[in-house]
Image (cartoon, rainbow, N blue to C red; front, side):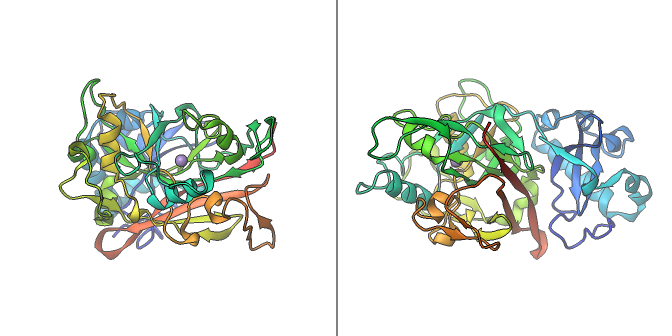
Length: 401
Ligand code: MN
């Protein structure tokens, strides 16, 4: 039980402790750990030798800490739990806490490469029906490998950063010439991202069983998507400018250790997969996502039903010998369940704009309007029957430039 006021029993208790980076005023970014409605200044804690991580916690990003690996991550976490639960440490540690409302989150790590998958069978089926009506919704490769693409790491942005509506080419179905202008079908994709800590060597494969040696933790992701730009540009090479203008990530990374109670059996795979994609014990994370559109809860996507697991995604993205770098991010793909109110994109929620949704303010929506705000949240089973809250990812749409 933590001594931090108000933190015990909440979603950011002492058994969660997500990591992030923050600024205050003009000060340089510093690393922090979130506890309740407070942030523990990790740089100050390491300088005071309350916790030791080879100086990595004094850096402006988490990268040096991410590179340390599982034994160090576990040791630092155990020490932080001790500092925040044992009253004897309170006099030294309490002065290093700031209210989370007093700090400005910044991107917690310097991203390496960014890969986005497409691992929900429900999402892939829904999108296949919309993009290729009258045809088999899942393409022949879908159940043999986790489909993905390399995204743009340089436009990963921290939760709260506004998103300028992108401009680009689009062509209405059946229309002759493409037109250029602001996207008229701007959408979200509610996803779960995995932050890589320990790199791998070029030419080496990372087996499914090595997932926890490489992956540090989890962040919620919003893969903003301009559907009209996407529909015109995506064949034959996949998503490009419809996605690369911005991808939002939560401010606080939940370490894998906090999700120990959240693993559940993953769906059975038929046909059987290639040897390198097999797992002794196939497991997914039981994260319950929420999507709020201008404050109205419009969807509850369930992450537990994803067809491809994070360990399979990691094995697949390295099976050709591509090296992992510290700070790489790979995201799950849109999380959708079987029900309409479980879909992780507005393309699916509104059936491609055919059935608008009405928000609590009375406004009717098919896709995002300028000024709209979307917040993706999630909770997960925590230790000892508790529930942890993943840090939300939020963003608002600005008018095109
Ligand atoms: Mn996506």
